[in-house]
Length: 529
Image 1 (cartoon, rainbow, N blue to C red):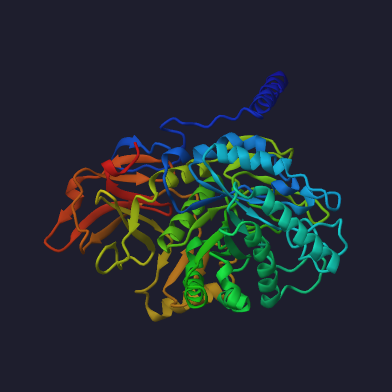
Image 2 (cartoon, helix red, strand yellow; image 1 turned 90 degrees about the vertical axis):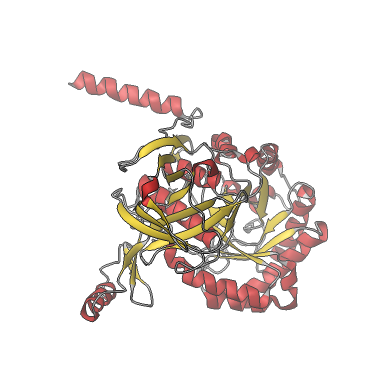
């Protein structure tokens, strides 16, 4: 037995070593295996589409933290273009570019930008963070705080001037300082909305000086607080016109919890910057439980629940007309704040503590499936679930309706919790007490203000239940060859025509499998197969 274990350990070690720098994506029809079982006939699998096959889309991809060497771009670069996302977020890295005052070295960033551009991927560079070679220049890590001294601010201005001149003609999208609203690690006070606005304006004006047609995205707030967001917009005053987009982040165990605030943020943009668009600029989910300070910690995540979460966030953002960023392409080891914070496992690609890629996660393929299906050939139908569109009376479901350029309908849906609309008064009181007593402290259950819904984070369960949906309005058209799609695996199944009942003013779909992961009901010809 000892010899067998020794031989097995050696084989595993050899496999792990051989995998480093040579991790292959699975392109087979069964690239994602789950316990899902439905009583339908499988007829195909979503075909992944790379960036060269997609004209336009709603998606952005995080390739951050390379400015602090928390991961090596060359470890995962071959996996970026096949994912299909056409815009990547990078961080400029003042401290990495300027190690001696006045001497800038952009070679490391040139390599990344030029590699991505050669693959047909556009880049957006975030100007943060600080540089400790200047007194009062701030820290080079998250929450390091703005430059504060005259010397630090002068260094910042020169740095922004240098990087925008260097990348003019190659990079036209520029983002402001990342998460300026979180408390600095040195214990100094949090930045006020006025300070955030002033620093954004200062930076944006330098960008515009060198790249007059630059598309500048402002704020990049960690919070999705409508009050903070509106106060920052007010602080921009007449200079709000410098910014084409505004970013918020904000993490939640169930992605659907975010949208009450998102709608308020959209109202603020419409009021103070009607020319601008609001972006969700950073959201992702771990693939395992962490007990550190990273977002969504102390929750028992897995590769299954991560994949479901990422898709629900992407498609929820799309359904609320918000450009959506996937955070992040690869796991990384966060060594900042003067100490090693360990692995941040929100990547679509698995990496080890030596910053080596060791595997492709299920979330990579799930995101790839979403990107392959949901592009700019789809237009969202902005009806309601009770009229002029696709929907259901089941409040536990998220439902969205899209129409392709050829007129085909595409419906996407998933369960996001439990609907308590019809509970008796005493039962609702019990639900409210459970939440108040902290019985949902693990992030599994939360409740909305109407006291009618418990949101549930994605689980590791794959049991489906039958759903009933209706379609009314101008886009009412029966499917000729209906299919049901599980987006996590990409598997496509024939949907029985007898479960599609066509009336004069409504089409009803019966026995549609639903669970807590996004699924699609559409015409077979509407899919890349």
